[in-house]
Length: 358
Image (cartoon, rainbow, N blue to C red):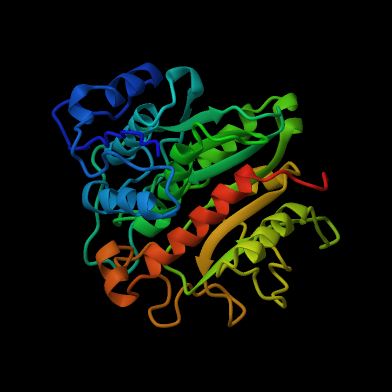
């Protein structure tokens, strides 16, 4: 069984700030020896085993302990970008596979603060720019699947929103690096979602027409660990209020049923979000706006007809409860179990041929 040694960088605030780095500088910092400590929690990762979600959980623990307050444009957001780059490079990708897109977020973009917070994190000095990180895994076809997750956060630990999403995507990217895939995969780690989806909008705006035509669908992972129920959403709503382009989420849900995973489609009956769509408040929206089908992974609770995340504690994200220690105490095993389900689904989805092309 093959093992890939992934040296997980230890990101500590140093005298040399990452704020305001250009693309070449960000790549350079990610490869600095001090960011590549070999015993930072992830070494000798067995990426071929079937213990889905275990690698993601280790990433999430690191984020909890080292990367709170990843506010858009902050030092902590840049440090997280360096984490992502270093993990990819140590995991088998090369600089030729990776593109960094720098974009402005505007001087008037105010950082979010936690609701009802007793403890917040300011993330360090702020700049007026952020970065998207794209890594391409070539497949047997030029047709491609976009897998995206934002890596900024509110001024909380941000393990759910959205350390959970980037952790699952990182695990998957490491698992897929030398694995057959029928389609080309583009993993996109998106900056500055919390203040207006700057990263996803900049990324979609940068796509050529050929690239748009080659995209089969976009998979968005946002808040995939704390909610009472694991969901899949999908579908574009046309001008008449009719849901179109549901084939991608139906394809994914078919795999859920085959794998016997505890993941559901949302309940019907919400007129604002007709079945099987979800909230238009995450990075799939710019893709959906240009007609690209999407599959949105999110754990939440819609049983009362609106998203309340958890019945017992209400909303977790953007509050002081977006903290791995709290969530593990309040909901033992939930994080691991949800990461496992979504990780197995994503891995299977990216390895599976689409039998009926749309």
